[in-house]
Length: 209
Image (cartoon, rainbow, N blue to C red; front, side, top):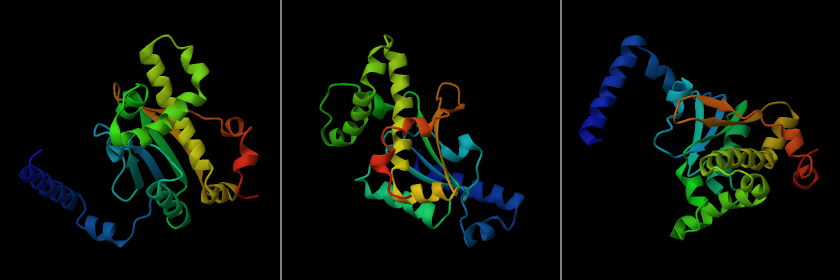
């Protein structure tokens, strides 16, 4: 999209918002009050507010390649801390998507330069769930399942953080794993059973009582 088109689209968007509500931007400028922290993939096909039917100010968003939550990533950790501690979000959603390029790249034995350290985290997900994935004969179904398992593991990574543990203990926040199906446009809730998933590691990662 050319620069001129971007600014023209922006003008039309402002005009439409003002026609519907003359106080729209006055109200928007006052304060953000999102109830959701969304951690998703940077893929250009996944438009957060559009697919969730949300307006600006309703969702606090963090995106990166393959929707990863890595403890050494200061950006992601800061986002989570700020969202939970200061914005007081009530829901944290990790959202992956089928046909994810980052997950697909991690499935291949190829040197991708600077991407290698990042993709290694996805390959670790493959390693953890190797037995399940190797039983899947279809490459396409294995690919889809790894996308789902990656979301599951990133949800667990969120649950390992101290601020989230404290908020969950106070029943202030929930964590959920979603998948966006790029083939249909629909969102899928993975309905993850966190007590079961955390059963064998809870004592190791528990930071709060």
